[in-house]
Length: 373
Image 1 (cartoon, rainbow, N blue to C red):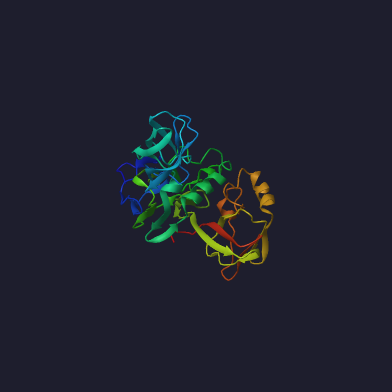
Image 2 (cartoon, one colour; image 1 turned 90 degrees about the vertical axis):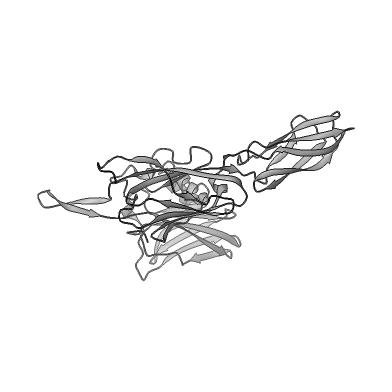
């Protein structure tokens, strides 16, 4: 902490990023003894995807090609149509990755007597921004060795997109390759103490991020920035005359964990979601997006009921959108943390979902423990 306490927020580079390599478990050692509000990572590399197309730069209806991709680079060309309308010569190939994760690859092909005789890659790709949902296969936040968040970038961005209008402002990634991670959630800025969910790391021993890099990439690069301050999460205590008598410090991080279920079809009760801490929100998606009915019970009380369409219509009035999810459950639709769903220690949380057949279902739970555990 600096000698003169700064009460405003600071933005610094994220240091301590180690082991960024294809298929590697990169490690990011974060600083403690500060209050973190958000992180923002920038991902780069060469990561051409299977949807990449190779076509002649000018019309040549009979000449067709498919790419060979190795570790994200376009390393070769398969000639799948040899008839050419071109005169003898060498012509350019256009290489396009519609996902945007591959950039800069170039190639040529040669024609003799209206037959494609050969094709070659002249540049296998250049380093550019890569979608974090492609760059990472897993991302885990640990404080003192305890897993606090371990959801994928697909769900990180999915949750942010779902909350886009609920608190004002755009909170989805503003640039390709960017992965914003929020501790102080911008959609809660409409309430008092909107930084209550910030990560107050004062007195914590370690904070690290384990980041699994995809193997299907070349020359991966990872940088980032962090927004933080040196304040504490605390509530001033006052006596009967309003005189301050002290401060009660607290921790209230939003914990995020994804649970996977293989449901057999029909009505399926999920009864193994954890109930130890207050439950803020559930984000539920199925592989085929075909959940047709939902019920949620807390200690036998019916909390939620309806089709995903009906449920999402209700939340839409508050600015929430399902995005990649079949449906949402929001205990704190008004952004008030204290409206979280609480289940008694010996009670039960039961989520019943109805699907037409066997289905893979992911439930992302946001809960709020009173500390980093």
